[in-house]
Length: 387
Ligand SMILES: [Zn+2]
Ligand SMILES: [Zn+2]
Image (cartoon, rainbow, N blue to C red; front, side, top):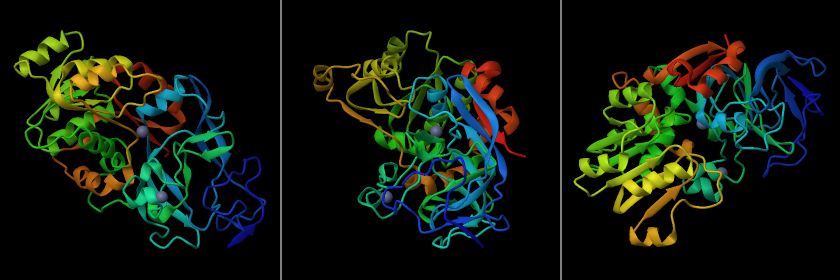
């Protein structure tokens, strides 16, 4: 076991709230003296529309509650496109991208009790402590010590997992063991898109007999279709311009509606003028919110899982009153949903991983980002394989 007082050369040290600002010691990977740091491959954010594959210092333990995971599978998420397109700003050039990953624990700090090297794990996109007041009510997405993988801003934050290795803080309360018989590609989805689908269905009050619209059928929207069916929705309408995505939604039991259609009229017809009980807005644009309000029935619930960056609502307080509207929004507390999501992921007949269209080597991530951004060749979900 090697100890060093300094952090990895070239990396900015940052405090993790709740932990001592200066760690008493930093453990380096076994077998590597403190002055030899290996380089590992990672997808780096450089600028909008410019991600690169570069060598970065191998992640090392920085706190006793950290683990290092060798990434077997990572993915490009729809929300990676927000910084990629320059729509969400603040991410520092040089940040390792990505927050969906599954892999093998290769190193644990001395404070890690639940995991040992060799464990196959999947992680939610944020870390969480499991004991703060937010974690205690299941709101792990807002954990007092939580950090989002793949986001470093003003020197603070956490490198991501589109890399060969990733450092996982608060490993015991963040990581989850992948069940033996669960297909790895499906299990990966429990860490983000499948959990977010379940969470959004719950935000929208989807239950037995609900008539539901899912607006936008990217990967998360498709998992929302799965979740609505799982929660007992009677009918699920998938409103989506892409034919391939509509076809996938239909394969999970939805009725596809093209955005080119007169959507409001079609919904009126399908619901005998009543409107949808629940609308799951998976896009994150004012236009999508507006359409959601227009097709929602009085007393219905609109849930927004899309990342919104605008300053104002696309509907007025008066409209909300007149509709007896319930509106919910926010980041999924993935850690709280993962056990249930892993159960769903283990259903081989359901086969949630059927949405994967592209499996590419990590070296080809830059082209994969481009394809995903432009939806080239019906690209829906991209997996990145480090080996
Ligand atoms: Zn994501
Ligand atoms: Zn917490």
